[in-house]
Length: 579
Image (cartoon, rainbow, N blue to C red):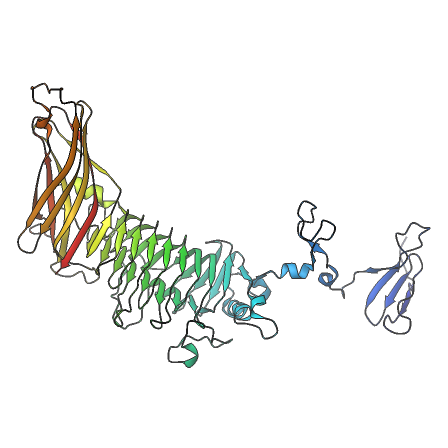
C-alpha cells in the first residue's frame, strides 16, 4: 500500500527548567524539553514491571556521551580491588580515562606523507609541555602518542622539558624532514609558544641548571632526513631518555666526509650533543636501543658533555662513528665520563670511536665489524677502529673482526696492520685466538701492531705514531698427544723512537708427566717454548702512503713430534709518549 500521507505525531513538550520542570510521563509517553533539547520517555508503573517510576532519557545528537559515561572502572573485576572494598571501586569518567594519553590526531596531524605535519606537531608539543595557564603544568605532561604514518615536516621541531613523544615503533612512526636544520632540537624552559629559546645571544636562551631542557622522553619512532643536517640535537639537555629510535640520514659510501672545523657549524650528524657552559651541560642522558645510519658521523659531542650512556645501539653505514672533542673551546670543556656499551659498529669508513679531547670515557663490550677499512675487507685496514688522543679513556672487552685476519693470517704479505686501538690508550679484552705450532722445529707467528703515521693525505684520520709502550699477552699451549700444557704471560716492552728496542719477559707454568719420554727419548724440556721478536715496518716499500710498524712474535719449539694448539689473547695494551 502506498503511503500518501504521514500524520503529525504529537508528544508532550515544554521547558525543563521553568515552572515545575519535567513532569512524570505516562508509560511509553514521549516528552521533549524544548529549552535543553532533551528527549524523555516514561518508565511506566511498578505494576507493569518497571524497575522504578520515572522518566528515562533518550540520547540525541545534542547529548555529550562522555559526560554521561561517568562510571569507568579499571578491569571491572572483583579480583582487582581499586577502592577500599570490592563494593566501592574507584570510578572515573571515560573522558578522563581517554585523556590520560593524547594522540597527535587530536591536533589535526594526519600521518599522511603529503600533508605538512609541522604546525600540528609543534602545536601539540607546545600546548602539552610548555604549560597551559588554565591547568597546572604537571597535569598536561601526558604522553603524546604518534600513530603509525609518515609525518612530513619543513622546520625543526623544538622539544621543551618534559616532552614525551611515543611512537608505534621505528619504520611505523616516521618523522621525515626535507629541509636544512635539525629534525628535533631541545630548548629550555624560557621558551614560549612560537618563540623557542635557541639563540645563545638571546637572554631567554641563557639556560641555567633549573631552566635547561630535561626529562625528555622519545621512544619508538624513526627520524628521516633528506638533507645533510642533524637528526637529534641535544643542547644543554639532561636526565633524558632516547629509546628505540632510528635516526636515518642520506649519506652513502663514497660521499664526502667533511672536516669538523674548530668553530664551524656541525652538519651531517645523527646525534649532536653540546653544552652552553661548564655549569649547564648535556649530561646524564640515556640513548638505548637506537639505530644511527647513513650520516657523515653518527654522534658528535663537544664542550663539557658528560655522564651520558649509549647502550645496545647500532651504528651502521657511517663515515665516522662517535667523535668527541673535535671542537675544543677552553680548558676543561671536553666530553667526560661517557660510556658506550654493548653497541654494534658496522660498515664505518674511518674510526668508529675517536676521543680527540676528553677523559674517563669508556668503550665496553662493543663489536666492530668492517670498521676503519674505508669500506674494504677486514684485511684492508686504513684507520684505527678506536682512537684515544688523551689518556684515561679505556676500551674493555671490545671485539674487532679485523684482528683474526691480520694477527695470524696475511703474515709477511705486505698488508698493513693498522692497530685496532690507536693513540694514548689502555685496553683489555677476553677474546682468544688460536694458531698451531707445527711438528719438528715449529713456530707460531703472531703479528701485533704498534702504530703508524701518515706520510701524506688522510685529512679525516686521527693518525699517530707511538714511541714506546707495553703489551701483555696471555697464552696457553696444549698438546693432545702428550701430557703437556703450558700457561703463561708474555710481557713485551718496546721503544720505537729510532731505537727499535724491546724486551720479552715470559712468566709461565708448565705441566706434564715428568716420567713420560718422547719417541726421541727427550723429556719435556725439549718442548719448551722459546720466544723471539722483531719490529718490522710493513708500510715502506709496499706502495702504501703510510709507515706501519708491527712486532712479529715467534713462539718456537724444538723436537716437537706432534702439532700443538696455541691459544693467546692480548689482555692489556698501553701506547704512550705520542709524537
